[in-house]
Image (cartoon, rainbow, N blue to C red; front, top):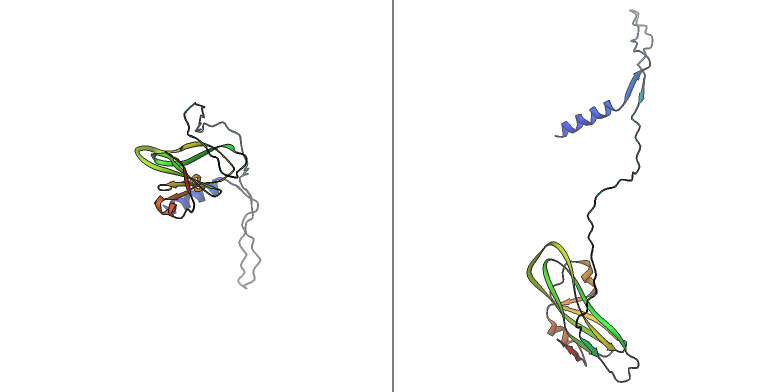
Length: 191
């Protein structure tokens, strides 16, 4: 196969140029007395193929994926939190999302735990049996919270899907171990 490629390259190179002989070959004259006159090798004028490299605008058909976002009215849990010495409250949507592939999944906010100025949103990611057939899917759940400004941290129970989008959250397999490290905590929402 390598020999065939080499021969093909030589044929392409020879056929892509124009060779014109400028002078004829002349052999040296030889005298019996061993006197010689210098010979002359032929000279050639070679014109190589003219190659231009650039870009050209063409119309081609390419696949496009369109995601349509629609607004729909649904029931969303609403939590109103009054903390001592907290000041103003604001309405905040706590949304957890995961990007999955291969199989369908569900993600649900199971509970919200308050400790000091931190708010831990505990969600569960569960794999289903339905195949996605090489597609990716983004799933989410949300809760509306009316509370003072707090530091929100998302903890997801389950195996972290292998997608860069999922690096935003902390994934754990044992929530009891995580909860044992929380001090002075209070569960403010359970589903």
